[in-house]
Amino acid sequence: MRIRLDDMRMFAALAEAASFTAAARGLGVPKQTLSRRIAELERGLGAVLVARTTRSLRLTPAGARYAARCAEVVRIADDANRALVDADEREVPRGTLRITADPVFGEAFLPPVLHAFAARWPAVALEVLLTQRRVDLIEEGFDAAFRIGHVDDPSLTAILLGPARVRYCASPAYVRRRGRPTAPEDLARHDCLVVRPDLAPAHWPFRDERGAVRSIAVAGRLRCNSHALARAAALAGLGVAIFPEFASAEDLRAKRLVSLLDDWRIDAGAVWLVHPSQRLASARVERFVALALEHLRAAPWARQG
Figure (cartoon, rainbow, N blue to C red):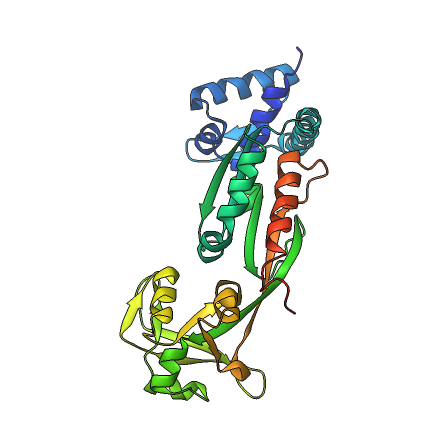
């Protein structure tokens, strides 16, 4: 009996999920179909691959060895298919490009990048997820991400865009009216613009004289879960705000905001553009990365340090 690649793909998915129900859901087939195909595969091979009970599933020793080989065969086949598709895409990129980013970064910087990409390559559909959650690009099928902090995943290619410092800011009018804080403890006498997703009590991070990070409790007249609202309030002179440098650099450069407590500010790593380190990278991803770098490396925060 000839073994079909689809059956090997199904068995590799079953071995990874360790569940007929979960594997069938991931493959988009009925559970009964998956069970029947695995049984046919076992008959064709003349070997028992899966030991089934009413409550659990485990691979036999032969099944474990075969699952590893199946996963490798499926990966090679997918790479070959991707290479063929990408060769055609070199002329006209097609398909779907899936991007994820931190919400503050995404709302501030992604619109012109996405608009330019959509205008240049209309055959590519765009899916964008803005979330503070660190998305597993490979597991969840995303092509690229903009990340804040540190990147230490060897399965990802990471491109440094710029520093991710923290800035404490207020409008010139607020500083004239209320004075300039000279130490973190002075914020107890100021109105702070608190941004929290759950509106819980807030603590802001500061770096002390020894370089250690400590937190100071802050409070003020405005509490919200939106950096856009906090920025508008800061520009209106309602209080002191804390922003990532990439979200405040333009306002600081234009003197709409002034920087406070610079001696105590902390570094939060860097801003990165990451994508899976695949041997055969998608042309869609390559062109998106090139376009994003063209736009973002001109940003004022990206030119600094």
